Picture 1 (spheres, rainbow, N blue to C red):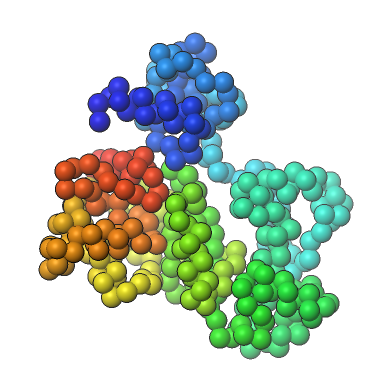
Picture 2 (cartoon, helix red, strand yellow):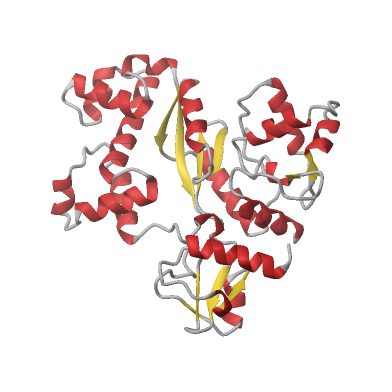
Length: 346
């Protein structure tokens, strides 16, 4: 892509406040002398007054200062001090049945807590706390505890209330919990925006950008397979976070986090082939099909590539069209372009 064409693309993203471009570029505004992230809420400058940069350091060296509205030097998805405080309270008392009045007693505005948690996690603080509490109840029941004990320890005096809440959050009633499987879910902040990771204590099942097209369907498929999903952390998620952070820092391209491939035999064969594409290189769907001994199955290979649920670790972004164009990517073409450029520079 020619430099001016890319700048036009960036300018369009700036006007739309497109979050897919977070971390992909920064814009310096010649008339004000500040530089911003793509999603800055400030009034947009004219195209001729914009100068685009790949990173904040370039903007600094060009003499621009950071915008005080969008704070381009901070992670756009970093928790606010209030969210951090509330997460700490949840860790200290995970079994507590939190209410708005509890927050007010701590001099915390419950509407602010609700809004910030909704923005950060897609659910309010009370909903998040309930999910975490029921996740602990799920673990108790799976570990052999009686349902009544799990009910009381998670703050529910009413059996029917516990069952209703349990089913709403986890998709099943307590008596069936031992038959099912729990996945813990957490957020991983990256230079290209937040990702969501889901894992049990043995393997990673899902790793996607939170604004990926079709993410809701992927999560629903896991639920239909009998998985309950609750907020939490475990050793697998910790490993995934550390390796993804190292990847974006250019320090890790060979992942050791164990993964679980949920798909047909053909899909799994495609995903394993993806993992064999060397870092810093690309291949076409046709090339991938040929490597599997199925040269005419490139459309099926493309479909399997799109069904990958573990981004970056299974590098579906390394597959491009035969004509050299980037092709599609569930996380957005701008991210695909950034990832390939990132890997070419190792």
